[in-house]
Amino acid sequence: MTNKKMISDWFHLYCDDLKHYLIYRMGNADVEDFVQETFIRAIKGLDSFQSRAHPKTWLFSIARNVAIDELRKRKRAKWLHLVADHSNHEPISMNTPESLLGLNGESSVIFETIKAMKVSYRDVVILRGVKELSVAETAEVLNWSESKVRSTYHRARTLLQQKLKEAAHYE
Image (tube, helix red, strand yellow):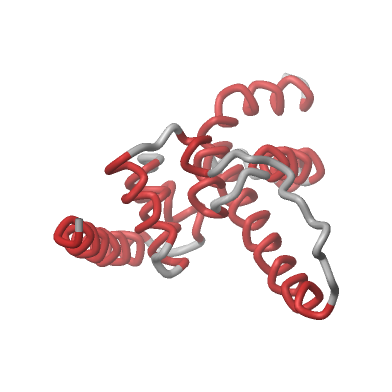
C-alpha cells in the first residue's frame, strides 16, 4: 500500500475520533485545523512510524502533541494580548465545542466538568471513557505505563462522578 493511500485510509477511519478528542482537549472551534495539523505531522513523520504501533494510537499521540503545542502558543499569545490592543477582534466562528459535539443538557455539564479537570485526568478520561481506547492504547498515546493509566483513570472517574453529583445538587 502506498503512503498516500495509507494516510487517506487512516484519515477516513480516525478523523472523527481525533476531532472529538481535540474538541474535548482544546475546547474550541478550530478543531479542523488541529486535525489537519495532526495529519500533516503524520505525513511528515511517516518514516518514523513503527508498524508495531497501531495507527490509531500513533495518530492520537500526534494529536495530543498538537494540542500541547497549541496550548503553549496560546499561553505565549496571552501575554501579547495583554499588551496589545485588540478591540477590533471578532470571533472566527460562532460554533461552540458543545454545538460541534452535539451536546445538550447533561452531556454539556459532563463536557464542562471534563474541561475543568487537570490535564492528565482530562486526557485519560477522554481517551478511555469518551473515545473508549483500551488501557494499552491509552498507555501508548500518553506514554504511560498501563498501571498508571488504570490508577489515573480510576481517580479521574471518581472525581468526575463527585463533581457531577455536586453539580446536580446545585441545579
